[in-house]
Length: 264
Image 1 (tube, rainbow, N blue to C red):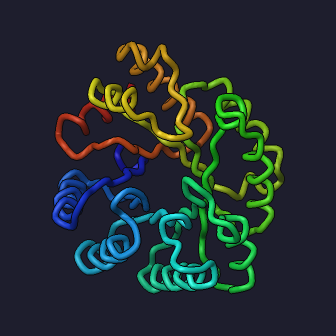
Image 2 (image 1 turned 90 degrees about the vertical axis):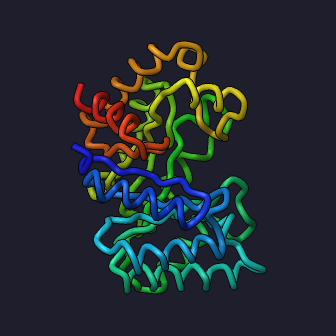
């Protein structure tokens, strides 16, 4: 069951990373994502790569590469660092990177600019990009779909990573629009999945995640949030979208909750 999912790891230091990867090993979890946000950036991001390379070969790791968090001095220097990271991934047989602009796009160093430059490199490496179906309706940002078409037209994009939200009808409508692009059938889709809990809801109410739409109904009823989560899993399964667990899963209790939701 767990091999049909991807799991995003969150950690503050190498010791936590080691502990969580060993939990994955004990529970036959092989598909892990390493984000590039919070403390996981710059030198610590590089240290994370080297530690996994040395100690945990055999995992199917997708690294997120935030152009905002990895920016260094200038767009030219930052692009060279990105190329170096891609080459390291290739040599380590990491097959894909999720490329994201980041919270605040850097001038002359966002995904569209990097894709345009990367096309000239002829490195034959898989790149994924993010897509937020909820931006236009809930955040008054109408640029997402246009940017999506520009990204996939580069012929470099092999996967789309959908942001989490609690409006399945809107998600279905957006997915129908994305399917109209003739490159759709060649692209793998992944979908964010947040596992509800009282702790998560309390934290989200206090500090909402930017660009993540969760309805009041879900934030004030754990039972309703669970019901929605099951519906979203069914939607992902029906549309061949691989779920990505973005909340913490590294305890027996939390993993059992995930298994119970997936299996129903």
